[in-house]
Amino acid sequence: MAKLKKLVIHPGFHKTGTTALQQALSEVRSELRASGFSYPKILGNAHHRAAWSIIENTWGWKKRGGRLMAPVEWQKLEKKIRSSKDVSVISSEFFSQANDEQLANLAGKIKGMDVEVIFTWRPLPFMLASSYQQYLKYGLKLSYSQWLDSIFETSGQAKDTPSFWLRNLHGDVVSRWAEVFGVENISLIAVDESNPNFLYNSFSELAGIPAGIIREPAHKEMNRSLTFNESALLLEINRAYPEDLDWDSYEIFIRKGNVKALIGSDVYETSDEKIFTPEWAVAKAAEINLKSVEQIKSLGIKIVGDIDRGDFSRIPIGVNTPVTTISIATAARAMIGVDMDSIKRMHGRAITKEFFHRLKKITKARLRLK
Image 1: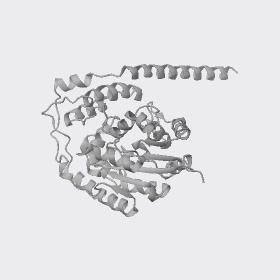
Image 2: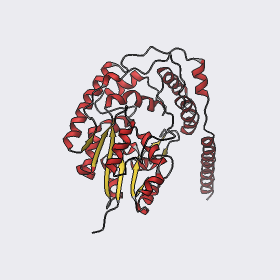
Image 3: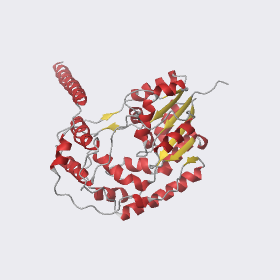
Image 4: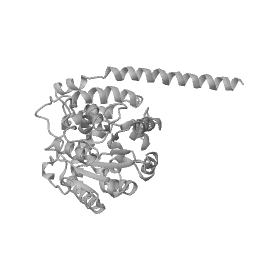
């Protein structure tokens, strides 16, 4: 019987060292190939576009210029996987958002492969402040307290950010993948932030990659958390952002401009507060997390690390002092940063959009003449 081609899928979870792992894998592609492994290169360090294609995700604002990822984005990745003789490794935390139908679709596309799934995981209470910051970067107009109320108001539902529970009911997510790919093919690494090498070493061991190849990235991208003052500034920008401007302009001037200029630097006002999470929200998240942990353990998958960790006292707990002023230094840092390559791409998209708009008008006019 012919040996099945092996595929290792890393579907997240979000905020579990995924970006660092993806950077690390990208940096050692040649070393991986020499050891019989392939980390396909498509665009960037991760395989987000392929994942968005599978989960039918719109990148950006659906009604204001967002782009639904076409099936070809997955097809490009699949072609590289099938053409390689090596064990392929793919990674995107957005795979974790796949529902039953989308996961079945993915399984159909890779039918006949020997699939190994490796999750990376942190307890839910640690996800709250970091997730809020991610949604702010997509234009969220709710304060942290308003957002917390919205996600906990109805169990498992989040009206303003529906993807939050799709990706963060960890027990449900792992159960779906175990049902499709088999419990014996699912592993989970409970990451330890104090020991980054634990993630790289554990992932290597589970994937069968020789020790020492995957390591801390040499060119790790700066991506620090926002201070509360900085998040208040971004919130005000989101609330004031003109309704007639589309996603392209927001992505370039805010995400890749103001935000990138802030988080891409280790300089910030030392007097700024961290983002504090109210005690009630940490307690609620801990309760949901406990149920997820019990659900995951009951599956019988392989677990590496301490999934029972409950060191939530490390989370900054409390209520932040309302921000009424922003330092001139913070304002200046936020103003520095537009990505010129992105501006060129936006110009190309704008020209294409205008071309098709005019073509549509001409076609309609000609049809009316007939």
